[in-house]
Length: 172
Image (cartoon, rainbow, N blue to C red):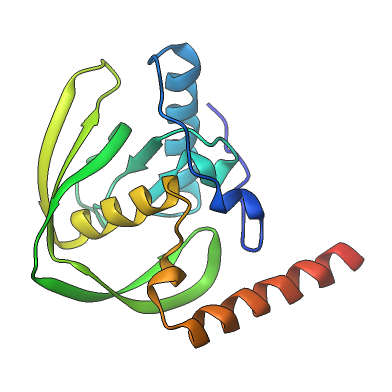
């Protein structure tokens, strides 16, 4: 296992639509192990493979907090089957947009389907933080960032800020 670098805005690879995983082989299992190590080290509650430069439909999630027993989920080819009409507004952040947090409205409950690392099809109903993280990570594999759920003014401001920071780093 190894910690992989996390892509940050304005890296254009974050906008790639990830390819489905055809077979859960050793390479995919190594990717998942690396993603968990990277996610926990960051620290974060979710990570999509595209965030570490691999445009595959692979997501890791562990929405536990503090001293709670860890509940890691590795999801291959996840998809949302159903979303509630009821909405929830909570603060979100992203490992690819560090130190920026804003309120995002999303469906309060969802039903999702994915493959586990043994290739079994799993369906879950999710609400609360788990539903939010799952939606956030599925957005990533579809080339969508949480800032895309904000007003155009806020999104443009964030994108400009990170583009300027990237230019300064390139000069140094």
